[in-house]
Image (tube, rainbow, N blue to C red; front, side, top):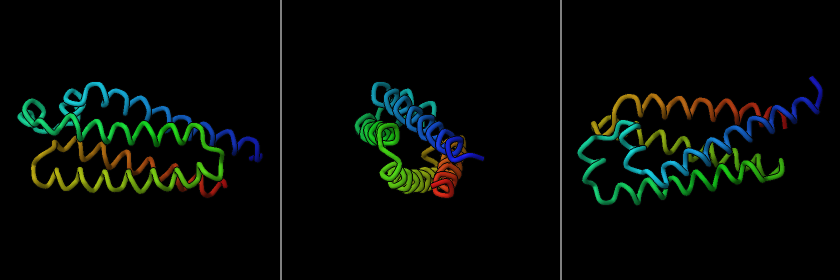
Length: 131
C-alpha cells in the first residue's frame, strides 16, 4: 500500500475515534443519569446518587478533550495522544470491571468497556505500526 493510503487510513481512524469521543462525551455531559442507566449502573444510583452527575460530567469532559485532541493534533502529537487515550481507556475498563465485581454495574457495561478497550488497542497498535 502507498504511504498516502496509509496516512488516509490513519487519519480516518483518528477522525472516527475523535468524533465518537466528542459526541459520547457531549451526550454524557448533558444527560449523565440517562447515560448511566443505559450503561447498566444500578437503578437506585442513577436516580438518587447526588455525586453521580458530577462524576459522569468530569469523565465526559475528559472524553471531549481527548477526542478533540485526536481531531486537531498533527501526527507526532497525535501519536502521544493515542497512547494517553489507550492508558485512560485501560483505567476506565479497570474501574468498570471492579464495579462489575461489586455488582454496581450490569454485565453489559463490562462487555462494552472491554470492547472499547480492545478497539482502542487495535487502533493504537495500527497507528504505531504505520508511523
